Image (tube, rainbow over all chains, first blue to last red; front, side):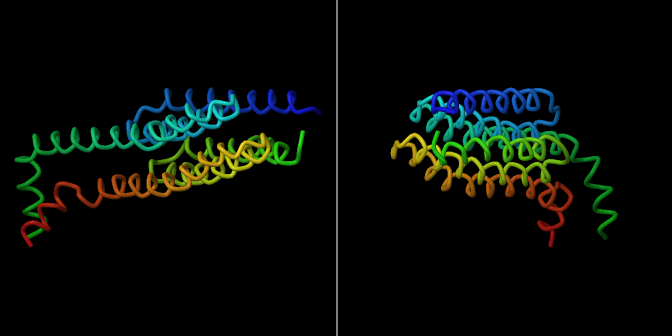
Length: 101
Length: 97
């Protein structure tokens, strides 16, 4: 098995991994779980770009897809849920205060 | 095909599918374990690729991922754990006490 065949095999495996993780990320309904799968998808895309001899694209994909995008999603989810909890706050406060005291 | 690319192929074929599978089921905290394992496996794959293609510039990717991976896991753990710790009733209790 020469180097070109090995390279094509590696690219095929990376493509399958990208397809599987992207499908799983698209099928996940909870945004928090989707953020974890998006990080895995970023890792698989990094491997694919590296095997396609594009290390600079892989470096930017690594920084954006693995770190920034899940962080933004988690921040957004926390902000939205906190706003929803503050919206329903008068109902929960009396019950919780009564339970705690 | 040298031994480095062979090791890359073996690790990418046998190592990554369990990580994707672990990251695709269970609760968010259980998925975090799959993500952490995938970060480690991808770091090794990138370093092996740098050796196999005989391009030392590819090693920077592995080094960047080695820095970003644990930091990202810490960020995930902070937000996932903070959601249950900083639930609205718990925060108000701490605020009163």
